[in-house]
Image (cartoon, rainbow, N blue to C red; front, side):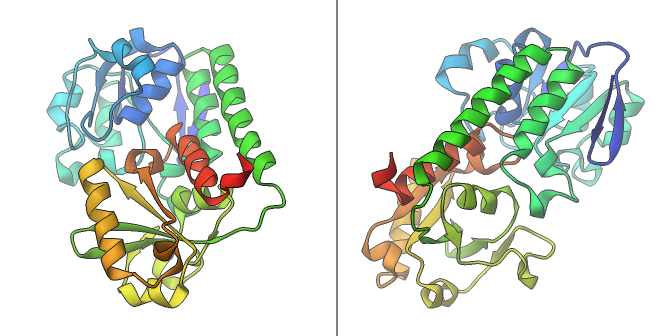
Length: 294
């Protein structure tokens, strides 16, 4: 069995038996593919909570880290043969994480979400998650489960497409607020989520500020001058959502999105590459942008 991932050829003579999900989003996908008995560890568990319908299936899976990728020794101690990650960052040796080469030396291979590959990060699309479902299904020899999960995901996206077909596309600014720091999201799967949800991003993915990274720190005037009809923002929990709403109301009182209260909070975890949450985000945003279509 051979799969191409981030330009690397991954070869599996046998089905991996000790798999680690490096983010709850990857752990969720593995469980939805019916692979909970193959999980040897889960990481970054505080980033988001697993959906209620599958949380119990991960209850006994060892937690390797909570708010950051696991340290090299903690990951290697699980003797994994497959590590599934949302991005390549989780394998940064300089941060004390096990690199892809170090994993290979210890008998493990790394599968990175297609949209999280370094050369794909800025051009990633929601449908990249379908590639991941198929790839992991092939690696783990569960093609039927992968086909069913992929079909369900495609059906959900098609339902959104059908609902908003012909609707006027409102202008949308996608931002991330941390304290007084304001960043705009202009590229990557985050921007494609806005597109799939029926919005027109006021930031151009081809702009120089997004040439090397999907987000860029901006001055509030950049939002005021574009006057978006909706603002989408990622949050890690209720407290950050409340703080962000207060910031947007106080900073942009005359912007259309604020005046009409079209401020759409989305779980930050649903914006990561390679997660079924991307589809949740598309549905959430589409319903807010086109309330009469659903």
